[in-house]
Length: 411
Image (cartoon, rainbow, N blue to C red; front, side, top):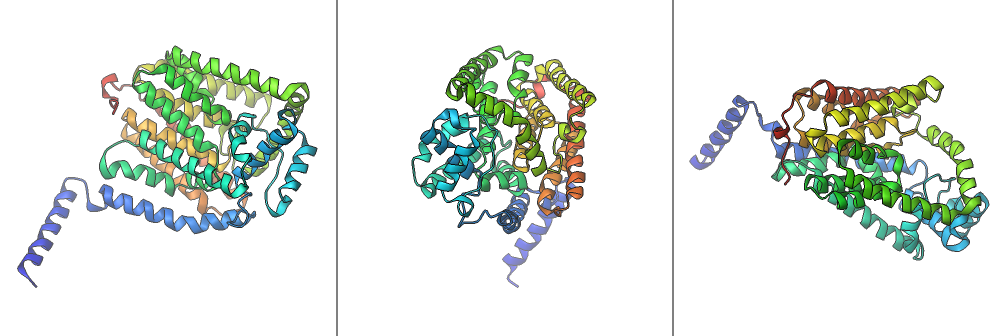
């Protein structure tokens, strides 16, 4: 064996032993984590594709993606008028015109019209071209979010988007072209601007959460409670304008149809999400449950108020966590918001105990893909996710003695 090769081998072993003595073994290095997470993501892709193919979403039927719904919905507004968005008979006509069950999936929607307005320009194009353009937007939003919130530098920074891709909710949301990716990018952008004192821009960017408001609605309220009044007022002003535009576009009949559809559609949504991935789902809709939900909402806002000096890192992460606990239903892609909350929370210098909670939560999110279909097992995993989120929230309240200057500085 050449002497140089032997020397290199000895040096490598020495570096490994030194790393172990310092409490940082080779397997704990960023490069090792990056490779492991990317490998995990690649292993999960065929399993995820098989899951999606079980209901018909394949490369031959891209209309079974969530974007297929957005596309169908926008065409209803363009062809029949925005006041007919929630008209089931017109929805069915447009669905059949696009090829019916052989091309696109259809179910009665409950989302606000904003997503249909956003997709309207793409609905003028052939579906394959529109789908490609939308997916480019979704991927760009994911990359932007990762760029804004990933802590650290170098390989450490790259491990966070790799970890997100290895978690089923984010992978699922990306493959479906889910609007939750845009909501996450909105919250990330608003948080990034708040750290730099740009409240007006932060409020404007946060308006994008109105595409899917149920998973981040406590964020603007949390900003108000924490003292970011200008950001809240800008958001509130934009939200009022959007609500007025919604009412005017829907008209009396459209608005009545939407309000009548909401309870039934929520019930169907819960049937699609039997894992009970939110606190509100787990406890049900009885009167005592409603009181408990209100108490939790007030508790989240109280924590934000008391810990507001910790800055936007803690405020936004806590508000996101509270939103996900209190939303009336959660589908698996929506859990991408939990990953975002965790990434933002890491900038607040969490304690070792809090980091362990985040690790447990991450493992649970990864495990969703590998959980068998029987809903009882999914229920147990959903309960673990909710309990870990509650423990995380409790840790923010119980371990507050962190000096304000310890929070990470703006990049």
